[in-house]
Length: 60
Image (cartoon, rainbow, N blue to C red; front, side):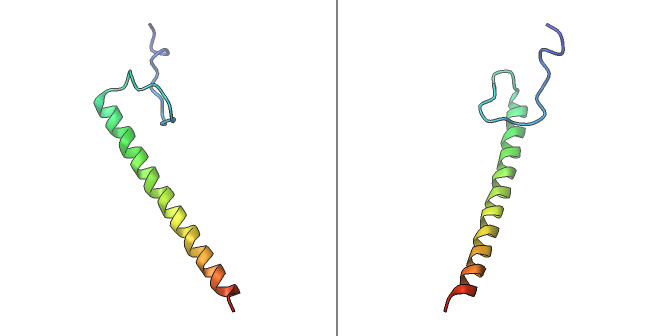
């Protein structure tokens, strides 16, 4: 098989094949996903703060 067949993906996709990845590559993917989870949680927190601020303006 040529090199094109085993080209490594540059980003993680949910449901992607993991069989050809090494332990180190899998650990890197976990780190990538944990970082993304932190980023998503921060976005959720920011939305919650915005909502609280908006609600406080419209309370009587």
